[in-house]
Amino acid sequence: MSAAAHHYDTILSPVITEKSTLLSEENKVVFFVPLSANKAEIADAVEKLFKVKVTAVNTTKVHGKSKRFRGVPGRRNDQKKAVVTLEEGHSIDVTTGL
Image 1 (tube, helix red, strand yellow):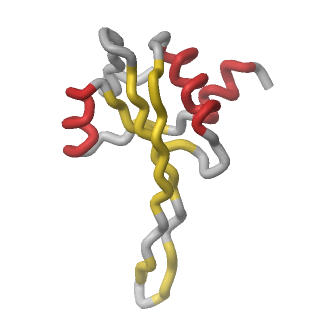
Image 2: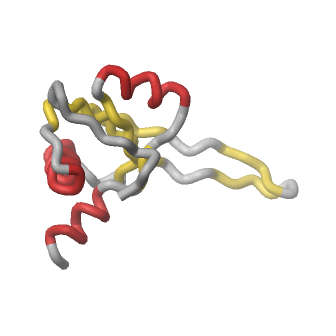
């Protein structure tokens, strides 16, 4: 697998919520990443894909909720989110896509 393909596997999708939009004013961007991704891989992927400089990466694991569908109990998948802090002067517009 090429290096670029690995970076696309590391960054699954941007998180577009009210809270993540407010974070963008502080030079922070939020992405969904695989549960197995570590902070160094995430920082490397963001720097290579978007050509920006990353200063910090904070991750959090979001546990899936237990739900019912047509009376059958089920569970949503766990997810991992990464809050990436960019260097001053750098920015990523997540609404345009890659």
